[in-house]
Length: 161
Image (cartoon, rainbow, N blue to C red; front, side, top):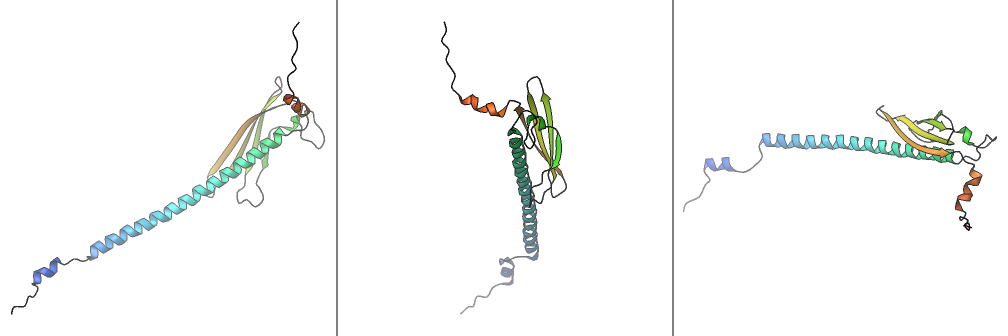
């Protein structure tokens, strides 16, 4: 009876991983992990910028609404008047915010039309120290706020003779 033994050359064709293949696979995995770490950092930075821009938009909108809510055209003690809407620079950092916002208000007045064009600009530095900026612009008419309700009255029809 004949026994079948493997010839020596068959062992060379057996499947397996060589050291070089293993090193290349480890290099690919390491590069992928480094790319994911970089991506995570970029995503956190962009999320932080988005949060800061949202907060800046909220602050700017609140400032514009505060200016639009003036109570008198002429200066009145203790009340915001149309004349009080002027250029101003102030710290607008909300409490418990890690970011410091600088609010700059630029006002251009057209006395002929009783109109003020107001630009509210917020500036801050992101966590990398890069300057960021957000601005809103609006126009505010200098009519007495007490007369605002007259816009809701129906028109009076006049009979033509």
